[in-house]
Image 1 (cartoon, rainbow, N blue to C red):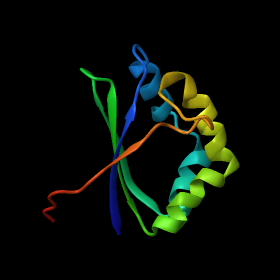
Image 2: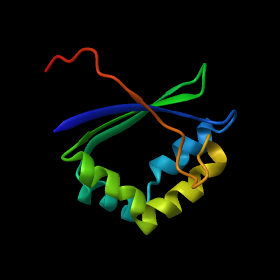
Image 3: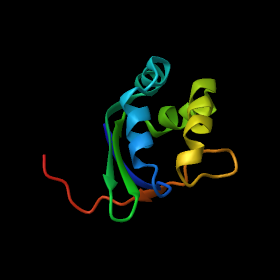
Image 4: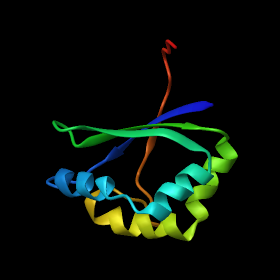
Length: 104
């Protein structure tokens, strides 16, 4: 399993809506994450900075990257775009984090 961590940027006053939407994550979105090898996916919020920190374990980088091409993922990006900093295609602006320590 490949462990990935990243950060994204929530717009001010959007934390409640962001959390509500993720608590009601569409079944189709859950399925696409799982079918593309995603496991143990978590997102954490630093309320002082509105920075979101994500963690996911993936089976394959290539398989994981294919999610971006799926219609349901593009629909999710469009749905979430008003809440966060996004790229031109509505994908979240995301910065990967480098692993500096791991204890199993």
